[in-house]
Length: 309
Figure 1 (cartoon, one colour):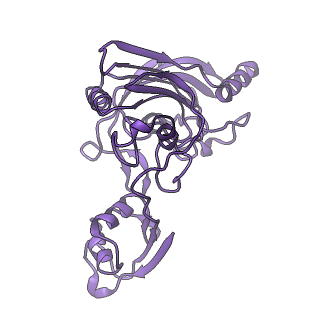
Figure 2: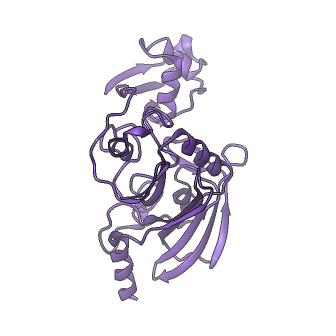
């Protein structure tokens, strides 16, 4: 990781941040700098800013420049929990703690690299660093996801996601007592202007429409066990939506779980599990449905809360 520390001089005041950096950090294109800014690797006096930010004299600009990842992903023989596999698709049950594809700070040990070792034919399906990846789960979320093994499957599955015909259901344990027995959260989500690594509910016109349906399954003291179904699939959608109601997911330190204090028993990852997945097979055109039981890491926490009532 290379770091560059700069201070804005008076004659440059008013320039766009990305243009100002392009003139002062050799070897980086403006596009790369914009990606670094959007990815939270550039801080302006300690704060995340947009590439269009107009710099002010005296502002301190701190830039982190991570090394570029190799163009092609290296296969890694990591064990996979395969729920279904045929010539077109691969349905996996991802454990918490595993990253789906390489990103900042996660170059190795990804699900995509494991899939590439398991099914070498996925190379070239989708992006070179995300072979076969159609949708993803957060690192600390467990459960079902589908990978495409062929270009035909990739095109079909991504089209189904755009058309919102893929059924994705999650189980979650949230802090607090969610009032209504069921409801719909329809709030736009976009990058948090104060921290580009986070997402946030944004004003209308400043985020993409995001819709989550939820249904309360059980109220357990100061927690609520619920089912959430995605109508849209934004980054961190369920986490952001529940936190916006004042009910962050247990174990989620990014979106407010830390402020609620420690959990009654240790929890690895988030109390969020992708329990059901359904889509139309790219070739047979048959509806395929899969289910994954709640993992022991969350079941143990639920059991503790039930006995504490």
